[in-house]
Length: 176
Image (cartoon, rainbow, N blue to C red):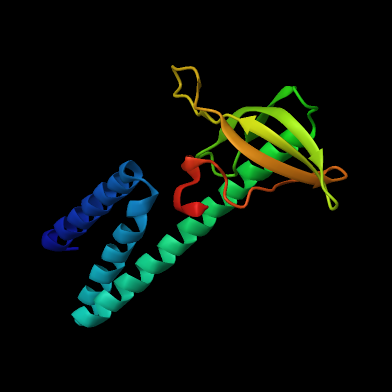
C-alpha cells in the first residue's frame, strides 16, 4: 500500500473516531444527522453524484431518527408499565419502589410510588398515585430524586396499566 493511501485511511479512521466520540457526547438526537451526513458523503464520493449522496443521507437520517424515537417510546412504555404495576401492588397510603433496567444499560430508571386514592369504575379498579423518578447516579454519587408526578393506573385482576391519556409528566416530552 502506498504511503498516500495509508495516510488517507488513517485520516478517515481518525474522522470516524471523532464522529463516534461526538455522537456519544451529543446524545441521541445527533446520531441521525451524523449517520446521514456520513452515508451521504460516502455515497456522493463513491458514486460521483452529489444528488444521490443527498438523497441517501436524508433517507438514512430519517430511518435512524425513527428507530431512535421508536426505541425511546418503548422504553417510556416499559417505565410507565412498571410504575403502574408497582402502584397496583400497593394499598392506599402505602409507598413502594419501582425500577426499570433496559437491555441496553442506558436510561435505566427507578423511583418511588405512593398510592393516594383508589376508586372503582364499571370496567376496572383504578388508583391515583404519585411517583418519583430518581436519576441514575454517577459512580461516585448517590441518586437524586426528582419531583413527584401524578398518574392514574387501572387494572383488572393482577394486570395494571398506565391509564392517563396525557401523563402529567413533563419529562416524557414529545413522546406523550
